Image (cartoon, rainbow, N blue to C red; front, side, top):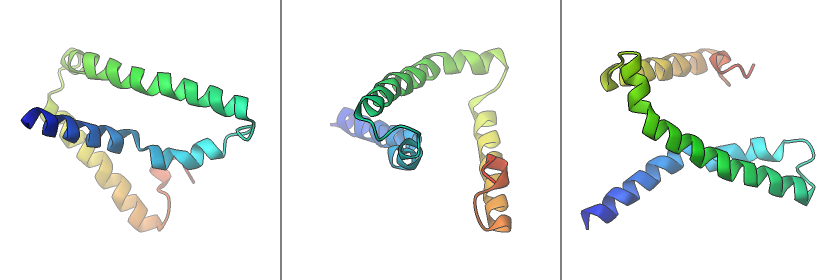
Length: 103
């Protein structure tokens, strides 16, 4: 039973990381996406690229961190700092943060 719960938790985490709902506006705003053949081609590329990148970094990630002498704790702290800066920027600017390159 715990294996099923672990798989469910990992699936939820992957969906949160990939954020398919957040990617929809970007996909819809692509030029020429209204043509079915272009839409299918884009979906095929996305369906191959995203899992490939996730698997590559899941397998090679620990080795990359070791090569740069970075621990998991250091990585978490750096991620927290990045989220803090983005959050403060969003509060100050009132919209999309300029740290994301969107303004």
